[in-house]
Length: 392
Ligand code: ADP
Ligand code: MG
Image (cartoon, rainbow, N blue to C red; front, side):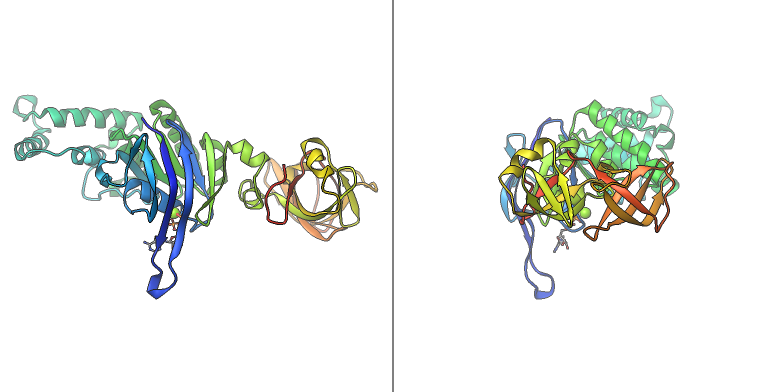
């Protein structure tokens, strides 16, 4: 087992059709601890797949180094990096049975003599015969035992003789996971492995992956664009944007204390509402004609910033429906999304003409066009400076 270290890693692709070169990864420093489950998120095209491919050896970095444990891997060929990758597209061999798909990586991982190769081939062609007629091969028997264990864990035993085209999407994905597991790698790389599955199957497979990772304790990097996967699966989340690491922390750290506006908007759905404010006296914010009192941890940093223009962020669940008073904020409801357990209101704050979203109970009867009154949680505000960096 081993941690993974990206050290000052950069990757530049030559421009397509004579265009400008593209800096896809920019001086990335990131350490994934031994046995950790790291979720990697970021908008499409920000370099997530590229990062996994660099680690797997499918591409070479332009600069910097990657280490697995203490060992730099630049000069280690892909097959010997002891990394297993699972793709969104499964990438199974269509002409091989599930059994042979699972064992493929195991066979390739060690060099064999010609004699061993013939022996292994003979083992496989005779394995369906009665026991006395089978050719033995210690190596193939080891592989078979490993495949059977993995198949049991992933409930694939009944499917071992099938071809990929005879499997459902979920079954194929389990084979792809099994193939990665069978090799018992030091690091698992998963690139949006569940995005081709329907919602129900995603939930169950998500739980299975987390459980397996816990049991095996294999260092894992998991790429997703799914908010629920990001929040629930990993020990930590790394947010990437334009090849730069934006923030690294536990899901709740990122959710409650995003380090900049990008992370604030990227983590959480619906995303944090952002409002232009100026700082008033005694830890207050002026929003349009309204004065907002701040409480809690943001009071201290605000006291020295009177007069500054900032961006104030508040999550949709931090606005509360309230009676009409001078202090509360009037809003016009533009759209209601009733989700059964809750509803999401898209509204316009009348005093400052800004749009926000509000999360509230599904039981409250509100319709489009209604005017409501809102009271912001005074401890829920997050503040960002002109560069979009969080104020702490
Ligand atoms: P993500 O997985 O985060 O969506 P990728 O890592 O696949 O993003 O790609 C990041 C950027 O690198 C994209 O702009 C993509 O077009 C570019 N890119 C990826 N592979 C190549 C390549 N082989 N040649 C040139 N550009 C590439
Ligand atoms: Mg990708």
